[in-house]
Length: 425
Length: 173
Image (cartoon, rainbow over all chains, first blue to last red):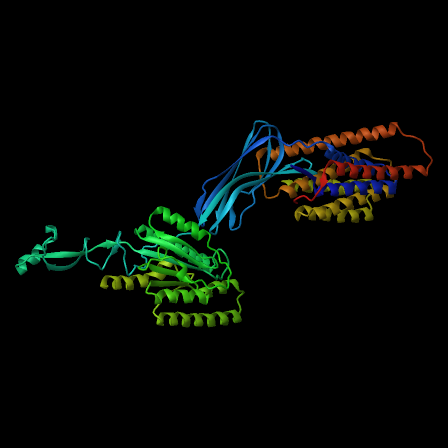
């Protein structure tokens, strides 16, 4: 623990010197008496400042939360000896703001007394940070000297991206072999009736269509479409981003990925993630609640890493990018390398949907309003429209998502179209 | 509440010198000192407050020099205690502005201010009495020399004491 003098000491000393100087100059004893209280105050610094004995407990209400959620921090101080003046400060991490209370507190406790300090934090952006490093300052009551120490009781907090509820998601064109919520175009055991065919030896008796059999005078059985799940791979573009945190294009894409992951996992699908950026990372498709947590953890860490290297999707093993998977690419389509990668996937026969968040509005929000900005944004919007039209002409399914628009609304048209295609297929 | 208390302390700081000598000069210096002190309190600027305090000291020195009244121990001790309390109060507020205060903090601090003010006043009166009793006769030219040497010695001694006690650093104001 280090002790130091504060700036107040020098100020008091300068006033003492001035009073004494004026006393000598005027030859009046009153000015020496004026300096006396300040001299006594300065002399008190010579006393030893004993560090108080206390126990500090730091608690947080939760270690995992979503963007916009509140986190309550409770600090309890139990004094074993007298605590004259103790200042506690917990620095706020980035993208965390005070919702209520103060992150700095001042205690004065008698021996055996307990004090509690509570404040609420609001996490505005996905992040991973540590709380519990409380800085303590033991002040002399006169404020001339202070001792400092740090209490470390680290608690990791993960802030997951905000998840918007999605009632409809793009249905996959192809299904897998495990049980799920999609009606497979294949024939098998299921609930959805498919077609009627003549009875063959070995057909279960419960599949016999008695009405058709009576009308046609011959045994017929009803075939069914099985309900199957699908593999969904979310491909996140972390090569570039525009906008101001917590509403950059990457933030929006991450929130969309989180919402899609939760919606697909709720439908018993296997969901994976490919972080396509300077650092290539992926999460293997699996189903279940634990997978949702794995995906959220990966999304929390998604940040753009600058690189000149063009990553080849052939590096991704097939177990991460299964051939029959529905790939949803989330990108502002600013980096040509990502556009090429998406085109490559479509050319390899993947069921690809590109959900492109518009960077125009995000950039416009960063710039001061002016006619030049308006003109530049209008030109950029035209260029982007032409880019999307070109991608659609090449056979890619592209959804243009405006940041002001809810994600569910951006997905609705595609859901209707693909549902018809899937059933027909 | 702290601002109000500091504002109340400015009144005697500026007004006591005017009791010794109410002239245009002391009035002008006093008004300037008052404006600086109030500006420091309202704008949370310790620099302004220090400038105001220094100006009020000059005002007091000018008032005493011009008036040539016999020494007023009560006024001098009161002026010193008020100056000390003003620096304390504003310094406390500047340090802990925006912090959550435990209920015992203000109570304890006010108790400390009252205690330290009373102690300083008591010591001031004792010193004044003692100096009157143990006065020594010196040639006329030796008084200012002795006073200057004493002042220099006090300042040097304080600096040495503070240096040896702790390492000097910046506070977080």
